[in-house]
Length: 441
Image (cartoon, rainbow, N blue to C red; front, side):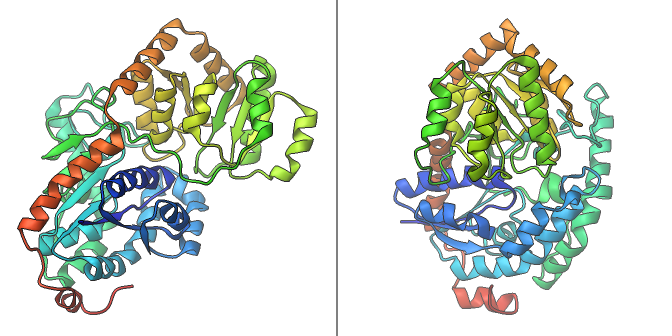
């Protein structure tokens, strides 16, 4: 039995796919240690994983509630300010857990795992949840501020991308990362996001080729596993009212802004206005709802049901369309359900994901600010398009015929276990901890 240490840093959309992959590895007999933000401890425990926190619950809650995290001008620097202080403590944690039969798996921000690989040859699989973070000059990601036009000559696109890497991304992350590297006896690095953070062992891309074609400048070796369609992350009690709503009347439209910080009261008002305008029925998924007040809401209107959480994998096949923020996991579940999408991106990789949903022929992109009239029009366009309906059915069939993404990813990671067993990586825990100057957190 190999120990797999998974580092999952970010929002729910970054963490949940790695929970699914961990579950697939655990089912194959491996020991899983899940390292993430404290709010995900319960979800990891439900899968039977050992859990190691990264940072504190208060720090994570404050970051997610900060408007600066969702502002394209400040989001990157704000996120780094939360992650940077955890690099050394998390490195110590990994050092204390790693033996000669360990494989590391890390999401985009798992810098400490990359340092472990670089220093001690511990096998590492880097995970890319969405294609936008691969920073390809051949297919530049869509970004609210720094999109490089695809029609430019390749040499110009390469130069512009390098400029973004060195003058924007490296300037934020480089000082603190390179200070830690100096402490570890490692030379400084540049092009942190375009080159350094990718594991030299293998990069696992959690999306299919039809969603993002592989590009010549993607890191090698890489493997596209397909979407990890994992959504069962909360215990969900039977909901008679929801069941009655789904059974009574035409199929509803699901609305969600995910974990994006937004004015949820305004969002709910917009949804209500859209339903009045279109005559559709809807289910609003929002973290800012009180189920005690739900009975009053239902007495006022039969058009809208509000819930904090419903597993989308079971909900969406019973619905007519999905209006969402552009999280790639949410988009994948809509593809699997075969329903049209209206994507309303707010920040981060959501704009690139939205553009790819549109390019796949399965939905409509509508950028913020979100207004009821524009959203109603976009929803009518999505629901009234025969080509979108046909393409949604095609993609649903394609996903149904594809191998399970979590299982494919698990098999890929298992390939590095054989190497870990053949090639001893470290002499012992004590030497690792002493090398970096103290005990882990």
